[in-house]
Length: 162
Image (tube, rainbow, N blue to C red; front, side):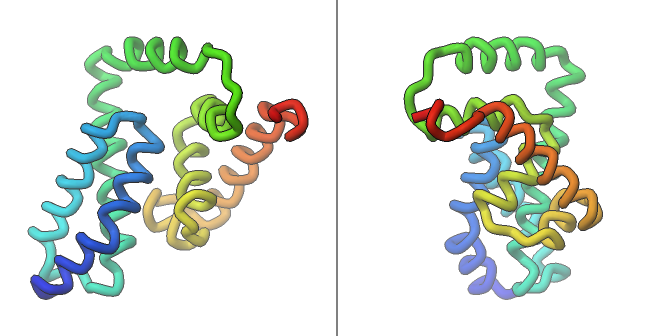
């Protein structure tokens, strides 16, 4: 990958990667750090990464950086404090559809939340999601199906939300 191609990757993919990470961790500063780390790794591996596959490589790397950080946090005991803060913030009365959707997404297990965000928010196909998360295509489909089923059960009919 050339310097020009790397710069093109930064311009085209940094916002999407940032949005994906923020949607998962709800912390813009950490998401910025993860995006920066992913692009740093891309720069260090620019010789080995093909320009055409850079987007998938970046999302996979960003996803793994995020998961590693969450696992480290969980081991350090900060996880209980974070989930308590999330629970306090989601117990409020919501009136907007987007807020209800965000609250419903927070109730999903991490892997289901991530595959739904990649599929429905970012528009990736099942193969690409499998590459990013390390799951098979059938596992991705199952997780998306289960997540959508839980979202539907949580939200109920659209009339009760509006």
